[in-house]
Each structure stands twice: as structure tokens, then as C-alpha cells.
Image (cartoon, rainbow, N blue to C red; front, side, top):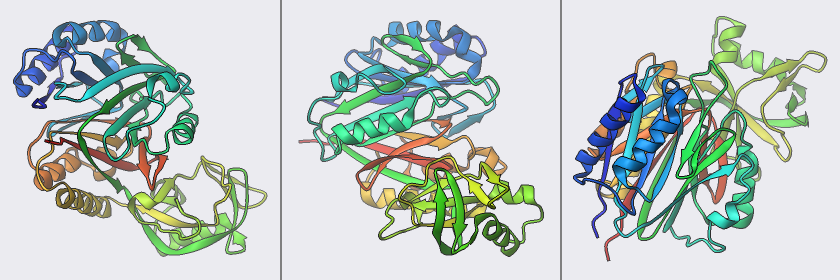
Length: 392
């Protein structure tokens, strides 16, 4: 059974008209009239929050889908289009193609995963879970911990559902309805070939540092010196003109493997500076530092980010050896125009390296990706998932 996918986009401000337009374009690209037993993925800007219930009803009625997953987002990706800080609605429709699709809306802590995911995941790339937690009110780290504990072989990818940064409200939608403080999830299983690439907005600068003192989420000392002093020295080495520029451009990179640390691409978690401890000269970071023994400073840089995007998509092209049936791109809200100063950079690289295929995505509050067998919460990254159905 052939797998057929299509993506539609609408910039119409009226939710009803936008929903009809986007769905019709998606169905037309897929070459089908509906997707019974298939699935629908939908991302929408905050302009459609007030009528999200109506949006959901139209999606279900026009597609006849068996699974629906979506959320509000800071920005949207649809084909070669990137839309930020503007009205938009992106819809992907996909026939079942012999795959099993199941969607759900879960509480913010992931309770109910036991009923949604089989006791034993299929593994070996034959199953894929997309998770879209509310970036403001869901506990994404608890969700990831549940998944790793119960289903260590299940690959998980997604992004934090958000708005445009002005309201602190995001919505998640599914077959059951529209909610906030939730996790929208879509599980695909069957004969799948899944290839994933992770690209960073930042690149390592200077040498790695030993963490010689830390408490909770405060980085106290690096190489025996107050962490703030080491950060300031790094800013001077980069010839940054102000302390504000230092905070905006210099991030902290923590390796996934503290025994054999690496600071490249997916092997490193990038975190921003949240504040300072004036008494100790410590740096406040978003996460607890339990078990971390080393780190490196990362420079947020548009030129290096674009180079890494080419590296990531080139590696995917070599691994996939052909055009995917569809793709999903989870991008950080701090990338796009905020990073490059112009729109459409990432999608242009994807098209140039991988060709034409149905592509949908969103700019979120964070990114989720499974790396080295661990589901991780990334920031300042782009996560590209390419899917192809395997033929017997």
C-alpha cells in the first residue's frame, strides 16, 4: 500500500477559511480526497488560538483522519516556506500506507503513556513517537524520564508548543479536543525507515573546562576560578563589545557523556545564561548540574550555524540514499530570522541538499530528540526527521 503525504499552508486570518484552504492544498499535494485511517499533523500561529476548536473540527471533517496531532507555535514551516511572527496555519495529511497511526492528548506530566505506548516498543526504527508538550506548563523532562524508563528503545522527537512569546499561552490539539498544559502525541509504527539530523546554532570556542564546583543549577567554578570570570575572559577572547552581547551570544555546552565528553552537534546540550550569583561569581543555568564534570563555551553565530545545517543535511542525504516520503522539522524559536537576520535559510538548505518532498515543521520553545539512546531536551537546535516507508 502506497504512502502518500501532502502539506498545505494558509496565511488567511480567518480560522475557518485558513483551515479549509490549508487542508485542500495538503490533500491536493497528496493526490487524495481524504485520509481515512491516516493521520494529520497541524501547527498554527497564535492568531488561531481563539478558534482552535473550530480548526480541529474542520480538520477532522475534511480529512476523515484516524489520528490528529498539533499545537500552536512561534513560527511555521511548510514546504520551502518559513513563517515567523505572522499569521499562519500549516497542515500535513498522510495516508496510512500500511502504517499504524495513533494520537492522544496527555496531561503535562505524561501520565497515561502506559495506555498509549505498547508494553514493548518495536524498536529497530519501526516506531516513531512525536511529542508536543506545552512549553509553559507541561513538564517535558518528566515526560522524557517516563519514556526512557519504560521504553528505552522508542525514538522520541518533538518541540515545545508555544505562542509568539507575548501571552504565555499555548494549545495542543488531538482527536479528543483542544487543551493547554498538555502533551499532544502521535505514534507511528510499521515498516518505517527514519533518519534524524540535529544541527546547532552554536559552535564550541576555546578549550573545554573542568567543573570544579557547582551547586544545584549554579555553576560556581571552572578550573578552580569563579565561573563568571572565566565567562568574561571568553567574551574578551571573542572581542565582544558589551556584556549584553556576551550574554546574547555566548552559551554553555554540556556533553551528554561525561566520561568521554564530546561537544559537537547532537553530543552536546546548549544552555543559556539565566543569571549570576553575585557573592560567588557563579553562573545560573536552567538545569541542575548533577553529574556534570566538564563544559565548553559555545558561540551563537549565524555563519557557523548555516555551515552546520549543510553538514547535517549532507549527512542525512548520504544515509537516506533517496528522497523521503515526508519530513518534519522542529526548529528553535531562537533560530530563523532571530539567528540569520533573514527567513528561509534552513528550508533552502534542506531543499538544496535533499530535494522536494512534503515538509512541515514549527519553531518551538525547545526541541526533543533521542540521542545515544536517550530522549533529550535540546535548545538552540534544529531537529529534522525524515521518514520513508520500507517496501517488502
